[in-house]
Length: 229
Image 1 (cartoon, helix red, strand yellow):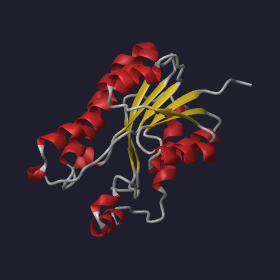
Image 2 (image 1 turned 60 degrees about the vertical axis):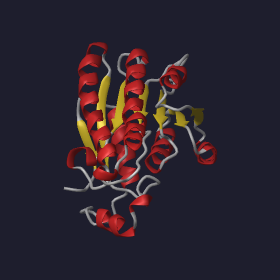
Image 3 (image 1 turned 90 degrees about the horizontal axis):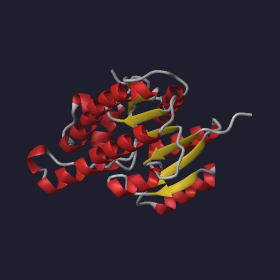
Image 4 (image 1 turned 180 degrees about the horizontal axis):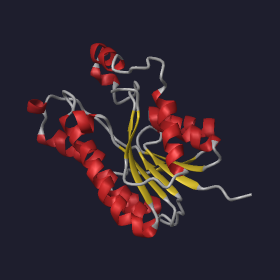
C-alpha cells in the first residue's frame, strides 16, 4: 500500500476550505489544515475529519517559513483570504494595505515556500476568484489581489516546470461564506441568480476540481469550478 500523500490547505476553516479538507481526507490524503483566527471552527473540523491542525498567519513571512519547516508536503492548496467591502473612493490606504497583505502577500510567501520544498510531481493550487476577471462593486482591493494571484501563478508555473511541479489557479463558484455574508441580502440574491444551475453545490465542485488537479499533470491554467457564464 502506497503511503498517504500529505497536503497543506491554508484557510482551511472557511466554507470552501472545510469542504476541501473533508474531500481530501475521504480520498485518503494526509491533510494539514492551516488556520489563524477561528480556533473553535478548526477544532470542529479536526473532530469531524481527523485532519491535523497547523495554526499560522500565512500573511507573515516568518510564520510561513515555520509552517513549511521540517514538512514533506506533496501538495499545497492556498485558500487563505479576507475581504473588507468598500467602494473604491471610500477605501482607505490602511484597508488597501491590509487586503494586499492578507490576500496577495500570503500567496507570495506560500508560493515561494512551496516551490522550495515540493517534490518532483508536486502540486500547488492558488485559489483566486471570478472578481479577478470581472471586478465587483465594493471589492477593489480584493479583486486586485485576486487578479495579481493569476499573474503570480503563471510565472510560478513556468519557473516550477523544470522541477516537475504543477502550479494552477482555481476560481471557485459562488457560495455563501463568511466572506460574502457582509454583502447584504439584496446583493447575495443577485449573486445567487448568476448561477445557471441553481442547485449546483459550489463547495462540492470546488473540492472535486482540486482533487482532479492533484491527480493530473496540468499546469499554468486558470480553472473555474463554476456554472456562471
